Image (cartoon, rainbow, N blue to C red; front, side, top):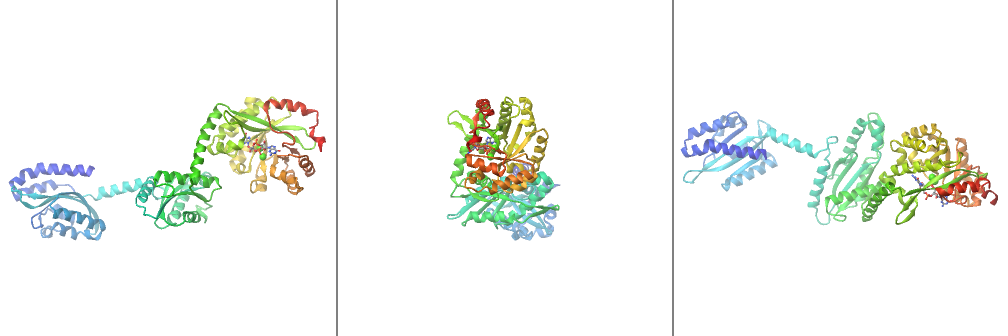
Length: 587
Ligand code: C2E
Ligand code: CA
Ligand code: CA
């Protein structure tokens, strides 16, 4: 735009200063003098050809800029001059010559045609404008125009454009370019062909950054980018976010197979500054025209597929399906509803007793969350906990749970504890430790009467271990929930600061079939590590007997009691206090 204004301005001043007066005078010499004056000190020069097409105004400046001696210039046509400067050697040069030639043939003015030339072996960029000259009698007498060497400006603009289109760290196209290339691809897709959009997200990049530092993280991203960029010839690979890459490719084959190759490309470990780093990623993809023909919708669909691939266990490729969109909508409304429910305190805790297996004495209660939904009635956690975890709402919700549980337990007898479920997200959230201390302080409950139930997934992170150590130092007990359902179970037992091992209900169910070997060995391992065992989901007298034989100290389940509202706890305690658990004699 500036260039156009500049040239228009030049033309205007050219006309006012020279043409108007001197075309009328038509005095060759004076015109030349004035033309020289115009050229003085700038990168611009004027050209003029006569009716035969030969350069008739040949200034020292043009000679200097073109590297062609003035004597030679006089014998050349404009085309001849450009040929001497190798314009034919590039595609854009040939195209520019074609444009100028067309205009000359049709006696049409042309403006700012950008043309690559080679002057003394150096590539330069010129801009040429010209218009036909007419005599007073409107007879054609040749051409006249202005030329500029715009190399610096051109290179600068190209660099700016490149910067705007490129990710500074990896050199890949950036998010903007990703969007525009996708739109281009969609605009030119042929029948029978598919345009596939993939979004790849590294599964463990944050922990690399956190543990090895940002410089290592940056280097890793550069290497990852280089590998991804080589996977499919002709595919566009862009960096569209911190550890997120976008791929656009055309194809007719199986998208799942193509994108699996991107995961394969990352399989070999990376070596960055002496660190061996294993990188895993997840990919979601969608295709046009099948899923949508709109760029934004496709990206959104690939994103949903990515999200699903991640929740399905990471390190995999997932294709978009309409079900995902429906689920996303449900999640969005659940999120909104859940947020309101937390604010208006629609949650309540039920308590389920945990008793000694041998005496039936009530040791404490597990707090189990219920949502008193204004329309749907009382909702169990499996309906809403997942959404709360995915959206992070588990943090404020968990806080409410902690405070309620501590406040209610503070009204119970001194030797009765409360145990609270803590989700991994909550455990890893900042300020969790102080939130626990605040809840104790506000309620007046002693730390010795609080227990936290964590799961193996949430427990493995180093940070969490340190936090749990601190909490334990204040007397709080830690229980490992659902033991046996995760992987590497025995590994985490060694690493974690634990007091209680909760044997998952699935093992207790198996007990009824007479096989108590697993439970017996779990109980023994727990003992060896200085922990007590608690069996969950005890439903029958048989199970209870077998657990006693296996040496399991604590039990919990429908056989003892179902979870009850807070207001029934006191009555339950007084009813069971002298009855030795009641259940004890029944088997
Ligand atoms: P969990 O921690 O394993 O809790 C035990 C679940 O088993 C409870 O279901 C309980 O009602 C049920 N249960 C107890 N005894 C028996 C039995 O004998 N037989 C059978 N079939 N089931 C029994 P609930 O209350 O629906 O809770 C489900 C899960 O929701 C819990 O599993 C826990 O993971 C989660 N949860 C509950 N409350 C909270 C909470 O406040 N915060 C967090 N983060 N999670 C919670
Ligand atoms: Ca639990
Ligand atoms: Ca459990």
